[in-house]
Image (cartoon, rainbow, N blue to C red; front, side):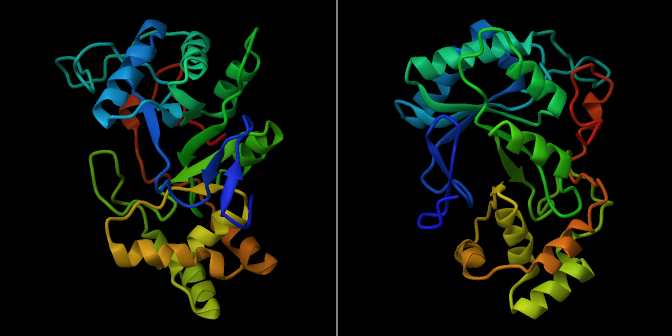
Length: 267
């Protein structure tokens, strides 16, 4: 981490802010465009919509491939997802070509487990390693094994849902406990005269994890920046590590059973 500008260096030499993206411009390759011939057109369409010449980061949203077409989430008559078969190594090669063409500065992945990452890393003729792996990560799902794996390969772990799930949707399991009401987080927050949210964010920063802390509230956005104003003790970090219960807020059950589905295992 660069302490002066609060940013992390990718393995390709580019940087990403530690907290959120700010003016950083990322884009995701959606699941229905994982066929190699669809990758560049999907990015070019995004660039046209964003009115940009390039993005800072282009990532594969998920290793699960859905049926190509106009439907964002293709389903059959019974409401089940319609999967597609694709070799992720070929998808990755298409991303490498996008980088070479100057359409993106960096390329990475999202929601990959270590086996799927290894498939890319061990690909014959690999030109660029993934710079990051964006996954759900918070004290109730600290992804410690995956984090160590990523660090060993110079891949940055990027955490979404770092504060738990704040908004309900069809993907969110509403039966899970509220992370920011956890007694341990609240006690540590009280000790440091901070909020539980800031403690949860600081926990990730000290682990070397980049945090996506989305908010539309100006006060909260400003508050989140205070994460750099204090430091958790080793005892605090150990206590928060102990909260791990492998609990996911984002419940993608519709995809479980697919051979490439990443969420059926924690590592």
